[in-house]
Image (cartoon, rainbow, N blue to C red; front, side, top):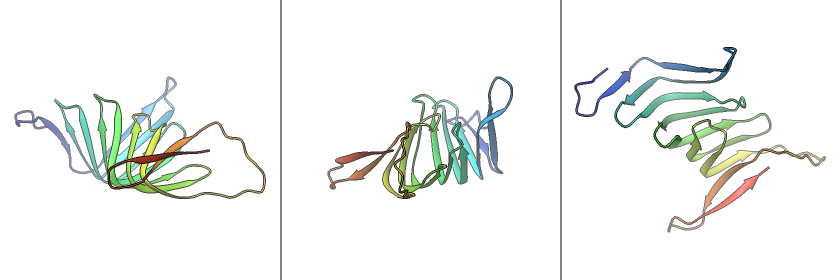
Length: 144
């Protein structure tokens, strides 16, 4: 812990592993990374290297860098992101989510989507943004 620094922070140089438990102490979610910083005054986590997160829906997120802003309750990254769901694999560059990682947007998406002859009805959705031009306009598609 570097409390005397101009911007006080905690430094985790050799791996960080955190689990979130429910009321009966079953693991709901987990996160790990090679290195982490926590900027105390900003309430900002910066995770670096082999970042791996499992959310409450058992979706797995893998990236090289991730930020968690506790003040805005937002998780984001400008790095490549790989997300594995039970039914689909999503990849892309640039990512933003609520802090539970249950509603997320990939800025430049790609993915592997299974094809079925039978129509399936799903209640969950996620959004992907596809840039339309260099003026930062985006088109949002909802995939079900």
